[in-house]
Length: 150
Length: 166
Image 1 (cartoon, each protein chain N blue to C red):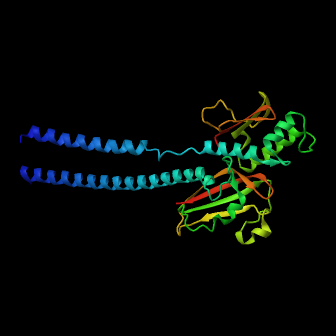
Image 2 (cartoon, rainbow over the protein chains, first blue to last red):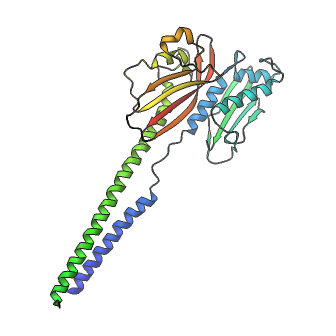
Image 3 (cartoon, rainbow over the protein chains, first blue to last red):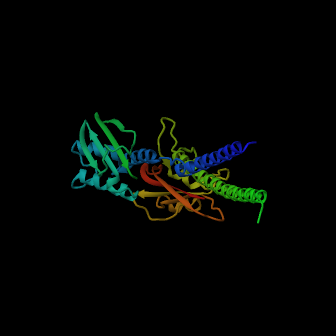
């Protein structure tokens, strides 16, 4: 082999080595450690299901809310709405979810009945439970829960 | 004084030594990188498995509320008593427990042996526990569940907690 050919061969080896090193370095720096599975949606759905089913004053919470909307006080408290809000806040607080990290909205016959929490539902990184819609005593009951940064 | 041929041989040997050192360093780096990526892949897979378990656990027929009419999304508190006695269940290195959070309970642990005395006043069930001898790290995930009390026909709020050991 001529001297020029040997030098080109050496250069080729160096280029191949640098390319291999660059590929590994890129893979190392771009590696994110695997996809973190989002379980917020599951938690949001379970929370909504557990909240609305919960027995309060011998009725489910959803029934108690509709009664309260209709002016019936199922729980013999001074103000049924204040009582319901405080109980919901107590349950969510026990789950270590901060007020900024959730929003719980209940509307009955398209009127906003309860709005708790400070989570901005317009944010993109929120988790939303499938809305709970039911006809209770001929009133359309709808409940939504949003979780953000939880 | 070395001749030109000897100088060239020395140069070749030097290049070979440097190349070998570089190749060894590269191999060590590659090996460590491979080991770390396998470890993080294992942890990532375990997390996915735990999340899947969190999603599906409350749907196990051994603990799910039974109804012949419709599908009820809740956990039967009486079924939880006997769950720990099931021998053919293996979830890996995990601890699974259920706690009643609303209304607040007495803090008593629920055991099958003390069912007639403690139920429904106990509020903590240890459902599964398998700890490895050497725990390097652990991760806890929780989800609220609806707990059904058939004797009083009441629904309460429980917290399902899964601790994974790596």
